[in-house]
Image 1 (cartoon, rainbow over the protein chains, first blue to last red):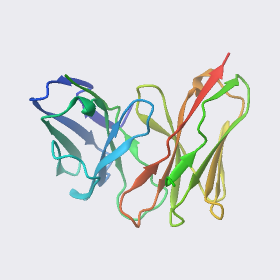
Image 2 (image 1 turned 90 degrees about the horizontal axis):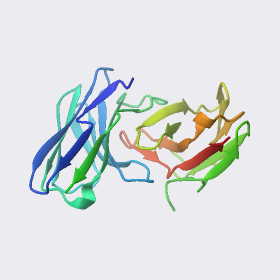
Image 3 (image 1 turned 135 degrees about the horizontal axis):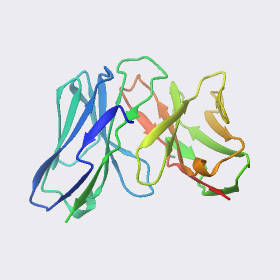
Image 4 (image 1 turned 180 degrees about the vertical axis):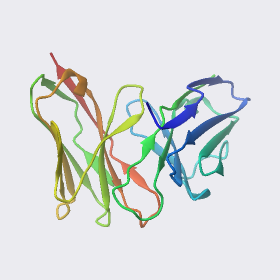
Length: 115
Length: 111
């Protein structure tokens, strides 16, 4: 069983809808990530939060809005998405700081389809 | 040049074969190295971290060559259940929490 929990597992939405993806971890990790993954491609980094502050935004369009309410939760708010945004959205967490050899742990993802 | 590169694959091998995957990285300041496996339509799962002295976990052996900026993964006595995409991941925490993924190598173990 994954230690990073994502909801919902599947989401179908229209281009005018507003929805949110949620991620939760209880491993005491202080770094959390959002990735987008298209078929047959590796995960593509979107956002990184470190100690609840946004530390990396990989030039993601503003129709994706991340939020980190506390050290265990990470949200991704979606608004006015395009069909090309259909993908698997993965949340991950890891130790923060400069300790090496600390891997990321992934949730099982939300499969998003934009109609 | 991409920051992390892997064998393009796919690799199709019979059960019981030994298969090796290669990964190169361009950032000499990279500090942490990992192999993940990803099954179709599933999330990446950590297979093993890669340590400087090399490390082994059952049928899996990982090696790191910092001078050549090269990582390898060896799978012995391959099983049908080893069929997956293998992702090489490199991290340099001096650049924040940035884990860089290679493109992945697809393995199919055939009966």
